[in-house]
Length: 271
DNA sequence: AAAGACACCTGGGAGC
DNA sequence: TGCTCCCAGGTGTCTT
Image 1 (cartoon, chains in turn blue, cyan, orange):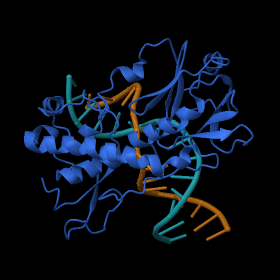
Image 2 (spheres, chains in turn yellow, cyan, purple; image 1 turned 30 degrees about the vertical axis):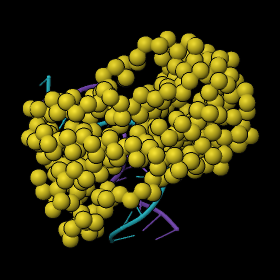
Image 3 (cartoon, chains in turn purple, green, orange; image 1 turned 45 degrees about the vertical axis):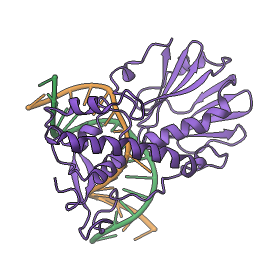
Protein backbone atom coordinates (compact mmCIF):
# COMPACT_ATOMS: atom_id res chain seq x y z
CA UNK A 1 0.00 0.00 0.00
CA UNK A 2 2.38 2.70 1.00
CA UNK A 3 4.95 4.15 -1.25
CA UNK A 4 6.66 7.29 -0.07
CA UNK A 5 3.83 9.64 -1.12
CA UNK A 6 1.35 7.69 0.96
CA UNK A 7 3.62 7.58 3.97
CA UNK A 8 4.13 11.31 3.76
CA UNK A 9 0.41 11.84 3.28
CA UNK A 10 -0.26 9.70 6.34
CA UNK A 11 2.25 11.68 8.34
CA UNK A 12 0.67 14.97 7.33
CA UNK A 13 -2.77 13.56 7.97
CA UNK A 14 -2.22 12.29 11.48
CA UNK A 15 0.10 15.00 12.77
CA UNK A 16 -2.42 17.83 13.41
CA UNK A 17 -4.63 15.51 15.47
CA UNK A 18 -1.97 14.19 17.82
CA UNK A 19 1.09 16.45 17.81
CA UNK A 20 1.41 18.23 21.15
CA UNK A 21 -1.09 15.87 22.76
CA UNK A 22 -0.40 13.73 25.78
CA UNK A 23 -0.38 9.97 25.13
CA UNK A 24 -2.96 8.52 27.48
CA UNK A 25 -2.52 4.84 26.74
CA UNK A 26 -1.19 2.46 24.17
CA UNK A 27 -2.90 -0.82 23.35
CA UNK A 28 -1.13 -3.58 21.47
CA UNK A 29 -3.47 -6.35 20.34
CA UNK A 30 -0.92 -8.28 18.34
CA UNK A 31 2.79 -7.98 18.99
CA UNK A 32 3.65 -10.10 15.99
CA UNK A 33 4.57 -7.56 13.37
CA UNK A 34 7.79 -7.88 11.41
CA UNK A 35 9.64 -7.71 14.70
CA UNK A 36 8.00 -8.21 18.10
CA UNK A 37 6.41 -4.98 19.30
CA UNK A 38 8.28 -3.84 22.45
CA UNK A 39 5.17 -3.26 24.53
CA UNK A 40 6.86 -2.49 27.84
CA UNK A 41 9.12 0.15 26.32
CA UNK A 42 6.22 1.77 24.47
CA UNK A 43 4.16 1.82 27.66
CA UNK A 44 6.78 4.03 29.25
CA UNK A 45 5.58 6.82 26.95
CA UNK A 46 2.15 6.87 28.55
CA UNK A 47 1.68 10.28 30.13
CA UNK A 48 4.28 11.83 27.84
CA UNK A 49 3.61 14.48 25.22
CA UNK A 50 4.07 13.61 21.55
CA UNK A 51 6.40 16.36 20.42
CA UNK A 52 6.58 15.70 16.71
CA UNK A 53 5.60 13.38 13.88
CA UNK A 54 8.58 12.93 11.58
CA UNK A 55 9.50 10.82 8.60
CA UNK A 56 12.66 9.31 7.18
CA UNK A 57 12.19 7.37 3.98
CA UNK A 58 9.10 5.26 4.50
CA UNK A 59 9.58 5.23 8.26
CA UNK A 60 7.44 7.43 10.50
CA UNK A 61 8.83 8.73 13.78
CA UNK A 62 6.65 9.62 16.77
CA UNK A 63 8.93 11.72 18.92
CA UNK A 64 8.69 11.96 22.68
CA UNK A 65 11.15 13.58 25.08
CA UNK A 66 12.73 10.23 25.91
CA UNK A 67 13.02 8.83 22.39
CA UNK A 68 10.82 7.92 19.47
CA UNK A 69 8.51 5.26 18.16
CA UNK A 70 9.66 4.04 14.75
CA UNK A 71 6.90 2.85 12.44
CA UNK A 72 6.88 1.23 9.05
CA UNK A 73 3.71 0.30 7.15
CA UNK A 74 5.20 -2.53 5.13
CA UNK A 75 3.07 -3.66 2.21
CA UNK A 76 -0.38 -3.39 3.72
CA UNK A 77 -0.24 -1.08 6.73
CA UNK A 78 -2.28 2.06 7.22
CA UNK A 79 -2.73 4.64 9.95
CA UNK A 80 -5.96 6.33 10.86
CA UNK A 81 -7.18 8.82 13.39
CA UNK A 82 -10.41 7.56 14.93
CA UNK A 83 -12.54 8.43 17.94
CA UNK A 84 -11.81 6.33 20.99
CA UNK A 85 -15.39 5.07 20.89
CA UNK A 86 -14.83 3.31 17.57
CA UNK A 87 -14.16 -0.34 18.29
CA UNK A 88 -11.20 -2.07 16.77
CA UNK A 89 -11.65 -4.44 13.88
CA UNK A 90 -9.67 -7.23 12.35
CA UNK A 91 -6.01 -6.37 11.82
CA UNK A 92 -6.21 -3.26 14.01
CA UNK A 93 -3.07 -4.16 15.92
CA UNK A 94 -2.08 -1.02 17.80
CA UNK A 95 -3.94 1.96 19.30
CA UNK A 96 -2.41 5.10 20.75
CA UNK A 97 -5.07 7.01 22.65
CA UNK A 98 -4.40 10.67 23.34
CA UNK A 99 -5.85 13.04 25.93
CA UNK A 100 -8.02 14.75 23.32
CA UNK A 101 -9.95 11.52 22.73
CA UNK A 102 -8.33 10.78 19.42
CA UNK A 103 -6.84 7.41 18.70
CA UNK A 104 -4.00 6.71 16.29
CA UNK A 105 -4.79 3.23 14.99
CA UNK A 106 -2.56 0.90 12.98
CA UNK A 107 -4.18 -1.62 10.66
CA UNK A 108 -1.89 -4.06 8.89
CA UNK A 109 -3.28 -7.34 7.47
CA UNK A 110 0.02 -8.78 6.31
CA UNK A 111 2.02 -7.55 9.30
CA UNK A 112 5.13 -6.70 7.31
CA UNK A 113 5.23 -3.38 9.08
CA UNK A 114 6.89 -2.59 12.39
CA UNK A 115 6.40 -0.45 15.49
CA UNK A 116 9.63 -0.12 17.43
CA UNK A 117 11.02 1.98 20.22
CA UNK A 118 14.25 3.95 19.90
CA UNK A 119 15.79 5.28 23.10
CA UNK A 120 17.06 8.85 22.90
CA UNK A 121 17.63 10.55 19.59
CA UNK A 122 20.22 8.41 17.92
CA UNK A 123 19.45 7.13 14.49
CA UNK A 124 18.15 3.61 14.65
CA UNK A 125 20.17 0.97 12.84
CA UNK A 126 17.37 0.70 10.26
CA UNK A 127 17.81 4.39 9.38
CA UNK A 128 21.58 4.60 9.39
CA UNK A 129 22.25 3.18 5.97
CA UNK A 130 19.39 4.87 4.16
CA UNK A 131 20.17 6.95 1.12
CA UNK A 132 19.11 10.60 0.74
CA UNK A 133 15.53 11.82 0.63
CA UNK A 134 14.56 12.05 -3.07
CA UNK A 135 13.10 15.53 -2.72
CA UNK A 136 15.99 16.98 -0.74
CA UNK A 137 19.14 18.65 -1.99
CA UNK A 138 21.15 15.67 -0.76
CA UNK A 139 19.81 13.74 -3.70
CA UNK A 140 21.85 15.45 -6.39
CA UNK A 141 22.49 14.80 -10.06
CA UNK A 142 26.17 14.26 -9.42
CA UNK A 143 25.51 11.79 -6.60
CA UNK A 144 23.07 9.87 -8.78
CA UNK A 145 25.46 9.73 -11.70
CA UNK A 146 28.52 8.74 -9.69
CA UNK A 147 26.63 6.01 -7.85
CA UNK A 148 25.56 4.46 -11.13
CA UNK A 149 29.03 3.97 -12.56
CA UNK A 150 30.13 0.35 -12.64
CA UNK A 151 26.73 -0.90 -11.53
CA UNK A 152 25.68 -4.01 -13.42
CA UNK A 153 22.36 -4.20 -11.66
CA UNK A 154 19.18 -3.58 -13.67
CA UNK A 155 18.34 0.11 -13.38
CA UNK A 156 14.90 -0.58 -11.96
CA UNK A 157 16.26 -2.57 -9.05
CA UNK A 158 19.01 -0.03 -8.60
CA UNK A 159 16.65 2.94 -8.18
CA UNK A 160 14.48 0.90 -5.80
CA UNK A 161 17.42 0.27 -3.46
CA UNK A 162 16.88 2.38 -0.35
CA UNK A 163 20.64 2.64 0.15
CA UNK A 164 20.79 4.70 -3.05
CA UNK A 165 17.72 6.83 -2.46
CA UNK A 166 14.70 6.24 -0.26
CA UNK A 167 11.10 6.11 -1.33
CA UNK A 168 11.14 4.81 -4.88
CA UNK A 169 8.72 1.87 -4.78
CA UNK A 170 7.62 -0.55 -7.45
CA UNK A 171 4.98 1.72 -8.96
CA UNK A 172 7.04 4.87 -9.24
CA UNK A 173 10.14 3.03 -10.40
CA UNK A 174 8.14 1.72 -13.35
CA UNK A 175 6.51 5.08 -14.03
CA UNK A 176 9.70 7.13 -13.93
CA UNK A 177 11.52 4.67 -16.21
CA UNK A 178 8.67 4.88 -18.69
CA UNK A 179 8.75 8.66 -18.71
CA UNK A 180 12.51 8.61 -19.14
CA UNK A 181 12.22 6.06 -21.95
CA UNK A 182 14.65 3.66 -20.28
CA UNK A 183 14.34 -0.12 -20.33
CA UNK A 184 14.04 -1.43 -16.76
CA UNK A 185 16.50 -4.26 -17.49
CA UNK A 186 19.27 -1.90 -18.61
CA UNK A 187 22.33 -2.10 -16.35
CA UNK A 188 22.51 1.17 -14.41
CA UNK A 189 26.19 1.63 -15.21
CA UNK A 190 25.61 1.53 -18.94
CA UNK A 191 23.15 4.41 -19.14
CA UNK A 192 24.53 7.68 -20.48
CA UNK A 193 24.81 10.66 -18.19
CA UNK A 194 22.30 12.55 -20.28
CA UNK A 195 19.65 9.87 -19.95
CA UNK A 196 20.35 9.36 -16.26
CA UNK A 197 19.75 13.04 -15.67
CA UNK A 198 16.38 12.73 -17.36
CA UNK A 199 15.55 9.80 -15.11
CA UNK A 200 16.74 11.77 -12.10
CA UNK A 201 14.32 14.59 -12.94
CA UNK A 202 11.38 12.28 -13.44
CA UNK A 203 11.94 10.47 -10.15
CA UNK A 204 11.73 13.80 -8.34
CA UNK A 205 8.86 15.08 -10.43
CA UNK A 206 6.71 11.98 -10.09
CA UNK A 207 7.22 11.63 -6.35
CA UNK A 208 6.49 15.31 -5.78
CA UNK A 209 3.36 15.14 -7.90
CA UNK A 210 2.20 12.00 -6.12
CA UNK A 211 2.60 13.64 -2.74
CA UNK A 212 0.52 16.56 -3.98
CA UNK A 213 -2.12 14.18 -5.22
CA UNK A 214 -1.88 12.02 -2.15
CA UNK A 215 -3.24 14.90 -0.18
CA UNK A 216 -6.55 14.56 -1.92
CA UNK A 217 -6.72 10.89 -2.83
CA UNK A 218 -5.68 9.67 0.59
CA UNK A 219 -7.62 11.97 2.85
CA UNK A 220 -9.72 9.00 3.87
CA UNK A 221 -6.66 7.69 5.62
CA UNK A 222 -7.33 9.99 8.54
CA UNK A 223 -11.09 10.33 8.39
CA UNK A 224 -13.05 8.89 11.26
CA UNK A 225 -14.86 6.60 8.86
CA UNK A 226 -11.77 6.22 6.75
CA UNK A 227 -10.86 3.32 4.66
CA UNK A 228 -7.55 3.18 2.88
CA UNK A 229 -7.59 5.22 -0.29
CA UNK A 230 -5.77 4.51 -3.46
CA UNK A 231 -3.96 6.69 -5.88
CA UNK A 232 -6.26 7.39 -8.73
CA UNK A 233 -3.75 9.12 -10.87
CA UNK A 234 -3.31 7.77 -14.32
CA UNK A 235 -0.51 5.30 -14.30
CA UNK A 236 1.20 4.99 -17.65
CA UNK A 237 2.46 1.42 -17.34
CA UNK A 238 2.00 0.01 -13.85
CA UNK A 239 -0.65 -2.72 -13.81
CA UNK A 240 -1.31 -2.35 -17.53
CA UNK A 241 0.11 -5.61 -18.88
CA UNK A 242 -1.46 -6.51 -22.22
CA UNK A 243 -2.98 -3.07 -22.69
CA UNK A 244 -1.92 -0.59 -25.32
CA UNK A 245 0.75 1.96 -24.54
CA UNK A 246 -0.62 5.50 -24.26
CA UNK A 247 2.24 6.81 -26.40
CA UNK A 248 2.56 4.25 -29.15
CA UNK A 249 0.77 1.24 -30.63
CA UNK A 250 2.78 -1.29 -28.68
CA UNK A 251 1.54 -3.55 -25.86
CA UNK A 252 2.68 -3.10 -22.26
CA UNK A 253 4.80 -5.99 -21.02
CA UNK A 254 5.40 -7.36 -17.55
CA UNK A 255 8.67 -9.03 -16.66
CA UNK A 256 10.10 -10.16 -13.33
CA UNK A 257 13.06 -8.25 -11.99
CA UNK A 258 14.21 -9.19 -8.52
CA UNK A 259 10.94 -11.10 -8.05
CA UNK A 260 8.92 -7.96 -8.65
CA UNK A 261 6.57 -7.27 -11.51
CA UNK A 262 8.06 -4.73 -13.86
CA UNK A 263 5.79 -3.10 -16.38
CA UNK A 264 7.17 -1.31 -19.41
CA UNK A 265 6.58 -0.49 -23.03
CA UNK A 266 8.98 -2.47 -25.24
CA UNK A 267 8.89 0.24 -27.91
CA UNK A 268 9.08 3.43 -25.83
CA UNK A 269 11.64 1.81 -23.54
CA UNK A 270 13.71 -0.05 -26.07
CA UNK A 271 17.09 0.69 -24.50
C1' DA B 1 31.59 -5.80 -2.44
C1' DA B 2 27.63 -6.73 -5.17
C1' DA B 3 23.81 -9.19 -6.86
C1' DG B 4 20.29 -12.54 -6.22
C1' DA B 5 17.16 -15.48 -3.45
C1' DC B 6 14.32 -15.85 0.36
C1' DA B 7 11.83 -14.74 4.32
C1' DC B 8 7.88 -12.70 6.80
C1' DC B 9 1.86 -12.75 6.21
C1' DT B 10 -3.11 -12.30 4.77
C1' DG B 11 -6.60 -11.53 1.33
C1' DG B 12 -8.46 -11.23 -3.19
C1' DG B 13 -9.17 -12.89 -7.68
C1' DA B 14 -8.79 -16.37 -11.43
C1' DG B 15 -9.57 -20.90 -12.86
C1' DC B 16 -11.46 -25.39 -12.29
C1' DT C 1 -19.63 -23.18 -3.31
C1' DG C 2 -15.22 -24.33 -2.49
C1' DC C 3 -10.71 -25.62 -3.47
C1' DT C 4 -5.91 -24.44 -5.31
C1' DC C 5 -2.81 -21.34 -7.13
C1' DC C 6 -0.90 -16.93 -7.98
C1' DC C 7 -0.43 -12.21 -7.04
C1' DA C 8 0.13 -7.85 -4.18
C1' DG C 9 2.40 -0.89 -2.96
C1' DG C 10 8.58 -3.59 1.28
C1' DT C 11 12.95 -4.67 2.91
C1' DG C 12 16.19 -7.05 6.15
C1' DT C 13 19.06 -11.02 5.96
C1' DC C 14 21.21 -14.89 4.15
C1' DT C 15 23.68 -17.13 0.10
C1' DT C 16 26.43 -17.09 -3.82
